[in-house]
Length: 310
Image (cartoon, rainbow, N blue to C red; front, side, top):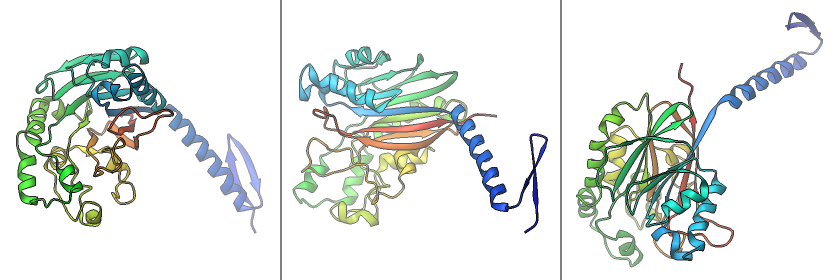
């Protein structure tokens, strides 16, 4: 075998075995990758319906268990639904900035809230701009009504009119609210390539990405193009959980309901985003606590990488 020569740092390195050259080159590449990745910034965003202020598992202990879930997950930003008087206490325990939108909605953040945006009705939507070490990010927290309890119907084996079901979800109690939210946020959405937009919340609706022919056997035989998630997709938003876990059979991501294991199980809580400044790197559901999980919804946590803009 011939002699291979490698110049490193101005010095010639002679090696009799090409494998040793390859290992050396790979090692240098790995060092470079580690150094580059160490400079990257990550942002953990959570959406969490805490169930009547988190107090269903104890007036005092429940909200503190919510704090535990958030702190243990390392969430930097939390879009909270059903805060009901606990938002301020939870934010204080975490030492986070707080935007208290209504009795229902709160947004809390490790990073400063620098602006509030015009939003739809206070009970259903709120939005802020957060300064993440110089990169502004818009975060909206939503709660949508459900027009009827399809989970209960499926639990009881009641037949569902798919077309009628879709029409009802298109109406003012669910997708109609979301349509108004998107309309109001349109200026921010139009600027998402510069200031990314994250829309979180309890949508009280399944996803068209989950209710597909491959999962028909898990959804009582139904395939449903849920209009709320389709609307988000139409406006260029990415479902961060399904981006990371594209196969709904392999990873279901159930958020309803850890408190009622015999209830019909569905994914109804989401973190959507738009804007190439962000890239979803990981996403998970959280539904455990060392003592007792405090909510009837699983929390969703997505880890974003903040892309360096050149």
